[in-house]
Amino acid sequence: MSRKTKKRLLLAALAGAAGVYGEDHIIDNAITPVAIQTMGLEITPIEATEVDREFDNGRPGNNKFLVVGQHCKLTFSVELTGGGDAVTPANYAMLLQACGFSETVDLADVSYARIVDDTVKDITLHAYIDGVNHKVVGARGTYKYLGKVGEVAKIEFEFTGLFGGLAGAAMPAADFSGWQQPAVFGSKHTTFTLDGSELELFDFELDGKNEVIYTEGTRSEKVHITDWKPDGKIVFEAPAHGDLDPTSIYIAGATMPMSLVHGTAAGNIVTIATTAIQLGKPTYADKDGVLTFDCPFRVIADETMATS
Image (tube, rainbow, N blue to C red; front, side, top):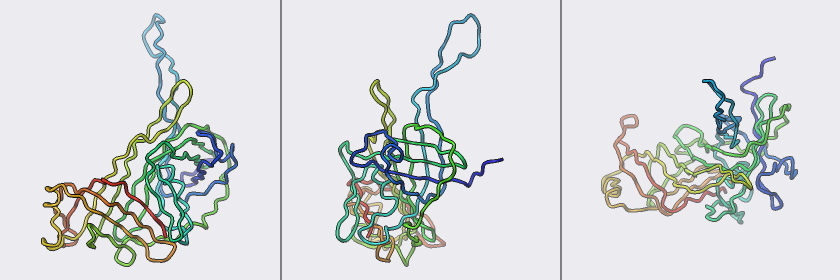
């Protein structure tokens, strides 16, 4: 019987207080996993290096090889939503933590800020593809926020983890009830400000660009986040020259705050903000006959994210 491409499911469990890096937190630590409502889930079953044994055996041709450095990669997207109320983390929150962010639950929101020391939690991912469970442990990743007018805003994730093995397994039941209805990116639900002024935004991208590295030594193998250099792009309607001049700002090398607020219903509002971005070289573009600026940017002060 043929296996079906669309029968895919991802379960995730973040390391707990008693967890050890690289353990299967779902099986070894009995942490109840969250069913991740993914789009475009793809898994590379195994990433590895093939080491040629290079025998001198008196003949030309291939030699056998050894498989070393076994690890895995997963990519997928989730919708950019809140958690249902101000103090409930969104169901994808654990993914952000495994991308290097701390989580703080306050009275009015749940906020995420960059961790700059070596305390980033690892995550266990069980990726089911019709009859097979791909187990990925010790995973950490990177992310990208995407918003385009008329579409659903989302976060793209890429995770690298240790190879935890494959197992024949039936697709488990999945509970997606905690996932919220997304708001469409646009005038009714989205507000964008640059240097305190609201702009007519058409396209938004912020790429976290975490440097995620798999390493192996004689004592252990791990996945590290060793650096991050986030950047992005904004496309907005060209304002009056006196109101905003991206070219002069670019030449001056000035930095400015940026904020994107998406969603209007309480419990389903997401705010992505930074106190300092630096605009890259702007170019003119067109949006249905309206003059626009297409501006790359570099994040200078680590961005924060909050749901409320």
